[in-house]
Length: 492
Image 1 (spheres, rainbow, N blue to C red):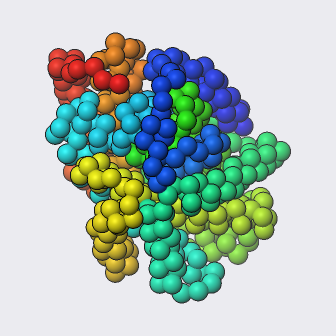
Image 2 (image 1 turned 120 degrees about the vertical axis):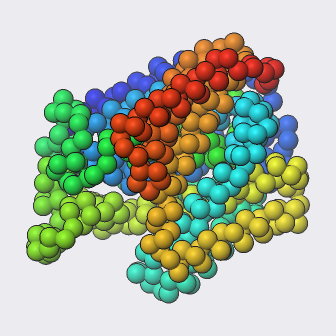
C-alpha cells in the first residue's frame, strides 16, 4: 500500500508544483480566446470551466487508463513509476503544452499545429495518420459496447445502429447540445467509481507488491508474459501516462475556453486525474494477479473453472474487462456493477463519438471549410462515416483480424505523442523558453516508439539488442535534426 499512497501524493504534488512550472514556462495571458473571437454556436462556444474539465477528462480517458493500467501492471510494481513520472513530466506537460498551443493558435487541431512548427510534410503525414487513428477508434468503440449491451438486452445489430446514430449526432450537433450536457455526467460516474475503489483500497489495505520489491519484469516468470518491459510497458500504459490521442481531443476544448488561465486546471489537471485512475487500477491489478487477490474476489465456481483448465494462463483467463467486472461487483456490489457498465460501455462510446467529431474538424481545417452550416458539416462527415461503416463491417466479419489491427493503435498513439512533444519543443525554442521541459520526454518517447517498431512481433520482430541499438540511432538522429535544424519563425 505504501507505493500506492506515495504515488498518489506524488501525482498531487506534481500538479501543484510542476504544473505551475509548466504554466510559467508557457505564459498564459488575457488575450481573447478562440471561443470569444470566433464564436459560431457550433464548435466555438464558451462553456463553464468545470464542464470543460469533465469533458476533457472523459475524452482523454475512456477505458484507456483502466484497461491499459491493468495490463501494464502485469509487468509488476514498475508500473507505479511509469504512471507517476510519465504523467507528471510527460503526459500532463504534453497535454498542457499542446492544448495551450491550440488555444493560442485559434483552436486548430494537431495536424495543423504540427504543420506550423514542424513543416508542411509533417502536417500532410499527420493528417492521414490522425484521420486513420480517429476512424479506427470510432469503429472499434461501436462494436465492442454493442456486444456487451446485447448480452443484457436486445439485438447486437440494433445496438450497433443506435451507437452509430449517436456518433452521427455527436459529430454534427453543436458541442453544447450533447457533448456539453451528457459527457460531464459520465465523467462524474467515473470519478465516483474511482473514489469508491480508492476508499475500499484504503479500508482493506490488502497485501501488495511494492516498488522496492523489484522493478524487473514480474510478468515474465509469474504470468507467462513474453514481452520485454521496455518498450512494452510504455506502450501498454498510454492514457494513464503519456498519450498522443489526447492532443487530438484538446483542440475541441480549446475552442470552448474563455481564458488561457484555465489551461492548467483543464489540460494538466485532467491528465493528472487520469493518472490517478490508472494508479488505482494498476494497484488493483497488482493485488489481483500478484497477491492472489483473484482467489479472494472470484466466486468458487470461477476459481474451480480456472484451476480445472491448463490451456490458458492467469492473464489470458482474466482479461482486463473481466477484472473490472469482478472487482466492481465484489467490492462495490450492485452499485459497482452499474458503474462498471458505465465505464466499460459509456466511456468508449463517448470516446468514439469524440473521435468522429475530431475527424470532421481535422478535415474542415485541411480544406478550409466553415462549419457553421449543417450542409458543410454533413459533407465533411459523410466520408468519415462511410469509412467508419466500412471498418465496422470488416470488424464484424473479421473480429480477430481487427484485434490484430488494434494492436497498432496503442503504438500509433505513442507515435503521435512523440510528434506532439517535438512540436512543442520547437515552439518553446522559437519563443526562447525552457524547451528542455518537452525535449526530454520527446527523446524518451521517440526511443520507445522506435524500439517497439523494431522489436514487436506484430511489426518487424527483430532481435531485442539490435532493436535497442537501432532505436538509439533513430533517437540520436531526431536530436541532431532538432539541434541543427532551422529554428523557423516565431509564432503565437
